[in-house]
Image (cartoon, rainbow, N blue to C red; front, side, top):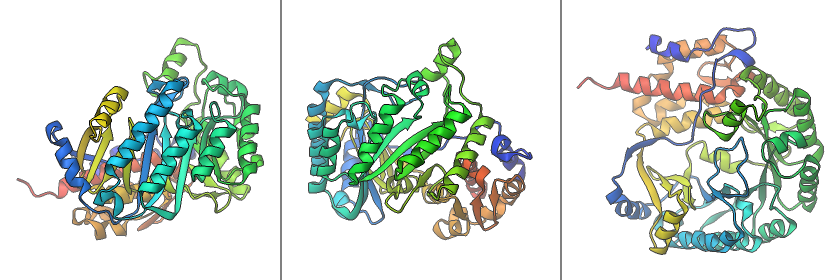
Length: 448
């Protein structure tokens, strides 16, 4: 086992924040097991709907439209047209109504609702509002349910903001990426930095919802001085929350192609990103913000980051809209990303499933690992309590934990906490822990 674990070892260095690993691991929430045959999708789905939920749950609604394709984004699917708003909202409401009366939907409260995309705020204000109201009419939301509308500054006018607030939205998450106009324009953002600041000031001054923004570190043309100014702007605006994400440039992506052609400057290399992350963490700490997760900070208790915290720890997720993905009662599933296929299925009054998988047999311990790394504190003793297949896992990975501890990524033994360097490399640590758990489970199986 030790020889197999060595592939996950960090490099011994005086600066683990920048040089612990040569590349970053990538983790996506959930883990899929065996696929349900296409011919059985609807029958199995109907059986799933008859079950009940008992754990915390979230709802995700996907709006797959954007006014343009920003270079850094990997989620673009359909170019926006005003004509799409009402028909797409109608389809979302119909999909919500198809499942609303099921035992699965009604058996336990939903703790968070999240409109993602794409660009949810591309929809007209009245259409966003009627979808939110229909959710509240049909589904058992908890009394403190977090209802987030994600958006971008372009398209997000006063009428839409007030329509969402009046309907019940209590959190807005806006991807600003940077407040520097040059950085923004080179990535396809339409609003200037000054316009972005005025947008957030107006949202903040309403004082009716938690206001959150995303910053990305490592963007082309984003010098360290620009990064420091981005951090200062968030603090000066007195927003409720901020995500500090590290840029990932995927091969074949618009940003990758643009850099290769020389049409865009290079992204910051990983060591520089590590330094920027460390500076951001320390700055937010000095300003009195609390770190909620490896990538997220809150200024006061108004910001809970509830949806993201729950989804990354394996909470049930009821998913709606073209391109959405969810997981419930031992199944993960996807909704048709092709808009025409999605609308056709809704017209037939069928769930527009593109896939349905039984969950990974190790889903419970994998979710525990994900939740612990996300919260920067992982109690490995709990693994033995939730699944017999993980018995002895902590002991089996002692060489790996020793390496990470000596490399400055973690502290502690049975209960480990992430250092600043560990928080920057959290996706890599989680990717490797999950792979190590798979190795341990496979080696523990009796020979056939």
